[in-house]
Amino acid sequence: MYYRTIPTDRTVDEISNLIIGEEAGGSQFVENKVSVLKESSEDRSNTLKNLAKFLELDDSIPARPVVILAGADKPQGKSLVWNGVMLVQGVMKVVEIYR
Image 1: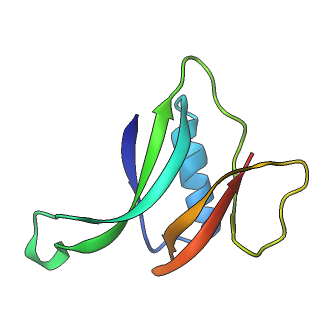
Image 2 (image 1 turned 30 degrees about the vertical axis):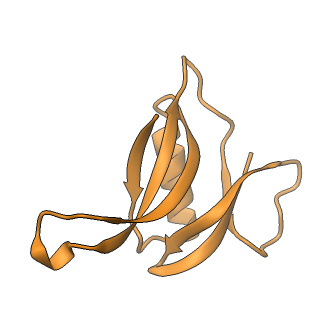
């Protein structure tokens, strides 16, 4: 397992593309937590970050994820694999990921 930060100012579509890009290297999104990370510079200390956890896979790329805001239409033929909070365009939102 390893972690990547996802920028907090991105749209749902941009977050989806970031996850897809990360997974193209042979890993799978597991979860996201909104965390306070200590930064080295004074002006950025104690800022909230999306901290996404990924699982490394052996020679495979998972099915493409569909990332939506909770309450949006569910994608047909897909199953919910994760839901939780993310900072989307700087606002805390409940997000769902389907595969």
